[in-house]
Figure 1 (cartoon, rainbow, N blue to C red):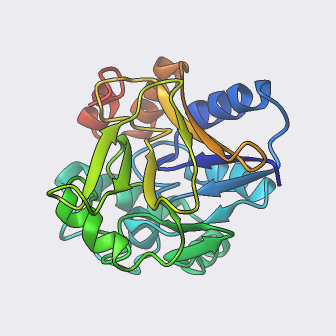
Figure 2 (cartoon, rainbow, N blue to C red):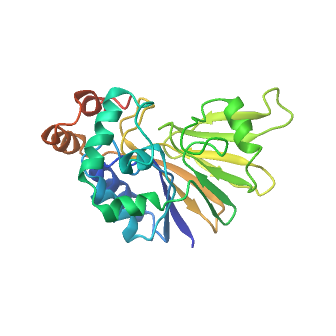
Length: 248
């Protein structure tokens, strides 16, 4: 595969996912898709997003919202709005869809990449926000490159044993390119397709080019009001609807 689309935290936002697919394909054919968890939850079209990714024969890992959507975990640790959305999702998925989600691994390896939703230390729960979590993850990462989601923020972690923290963390902006070196271990978060939280409301994703050995971060506008309308009609929590407008 030459061009692989990397997505995370789609969160049942089909309008955003379709915008990402269109935008990514403008750069050339997409040969594969890697999804880093939380395809469902929060948004109004969980089954449709699952089907779209399955149509690409995507490599998918489970996040906390996949597990909550099937009842594999409880929602005691979710905030009230997230718990309500998880229950709404659970009531609308078919037994076959739940079986598919239950069958997703929490860690996958693709070539030189390790895919996980949170961190390798705590695959569906830990947020990789700081150097302590990053080093804990890197200690378990057996490939040069790691891909994570969960924080809804596009970041790059570069292992640097000469630095005080042992690694460096960088926010990634639209259009930024990461050059891959097998001798330099990194962890990359492509941000969220369906619910960005870095103050930029545009859907976020990345593309891995195996020939160029690069990952490029992209942002794309989508019809937020269309998703918000579907969420309102579904009776999903007001805060989840409103936050899409601000990317928070």
